[in-house]
Image 1 (cartoon, rainbow, N blue to C red):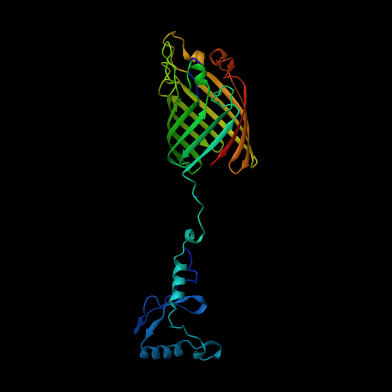
Image 2: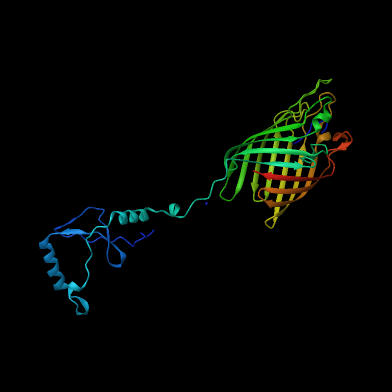
Amino acid sequence: MHGMPARLAPSRRLPFGRLRRSRAVAGMTPIEPFGLSLGHGGETQIPFKTDPRTARWRQRRRADTMPPPTGRPASAFPRPSAKPMRPTTLLAAALLSLCTSAACAGPAAEPAPFFSGYVQLMNNYVSRGLAQSVGDPSAQVEIDANAGPGVYGNVSVVKTDWVRKLYAGARVHVEADYVLGYRVVSARGVAWETGLLRLEFPGHYAAQTPPVRKPDTTEAFTRVRWKGLSARFNYSLTDAYGSPDSGGTWYLDLTAAHPLGPRWSLIAHLGRKQARGSDPATGAEYGDMNSYTDYKLAAARNFGAGVSLTVAYTWTNAKPQFYTLDGYNVGGRHVSAVLQKDF
């Protein structure tokens, strides 16, 4: 969908108060470790078994050194209960103490689906500045695997018409693209991608004289995105779109998108195709014939529920003599409308 041959060109306190442990004294032995009880002020007490002689000593010691305030007898002050907690109360306290902020913060947000994609309907399929459907309506479907960081891939199929118009007798109506890449996303939201793109044009090709090559092409690419800005560079590892000895042809895509509220956005694009190599038969340099710069201004409207509409105006400085098919300048000025539904 992206080109044409040279000839065409993301210290907690316990819920029931801080834990206070009484100092152990001689003759006192701790009971079972889970015998927690709530004492004064809601603080957690750890009860102990007390030897009778030690209890009498403590009572005399308290009367000698700590006279009760306000003149009330010592027996008027409540003493911590040594009655163990009920199992259900104990279980609730243990669960509260183990509750972490992540576990008690409520349900986590659902992760993005591993597979996603979209369907497009358009009056004219324009890619890299060229009308790939040669002015006719088109449709495209794409399925993506892993929209997040790491290894990702996608497959897309789109209706095109330029191959059948360029190759006499050919019955080729679609382009199939296969992408395998790797994506890294930084803490500041900068995304970097790199990978391979394979473009194929399946169908019937009639024998030509002299023989011609199918336009199937393999490209390496790298892309950087930040907020609404992106830059992508594609480099042909094979002959580009059927042009002999055209390996090394590259395309640079610079795009900026600016939101206008929650529903609207404006898009501007600048692209550059630089053809490499020369025609073996004539020696003519592809760079002189097929290199061009393309431009696009577009407005997009988001209707919600994954539905959007984009209207774009595109133009290039491609030479008409190399980019005209059946009287239609595929590199000329075009207005295209794309209705998209994400899934």
